[in-house]
Image (tube, rainbow, N blue to C red):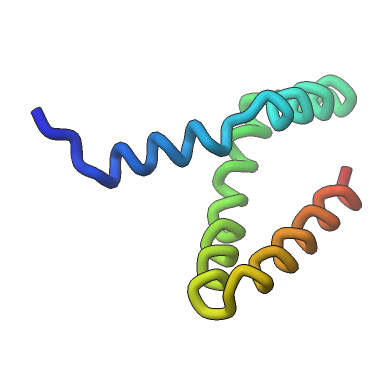
Length: 82
């Protein structure tokens, strides 16, 4: 049974973006706000898809510098929301 390369790549990506620091932030936010963490994870994952597409587009068309600046802007946005 051969596994398609996109499945392996997608699994690698999922493992890459799943980190203890993000999990701790989600747990803290859920505890403070009383929000269901499973809903927060699900909805946040869906909302995050366009941001990944944006970063990929910036990398393909404008280079690493544009991605770093865009990612920094997204981080500032996250910090302001939290």
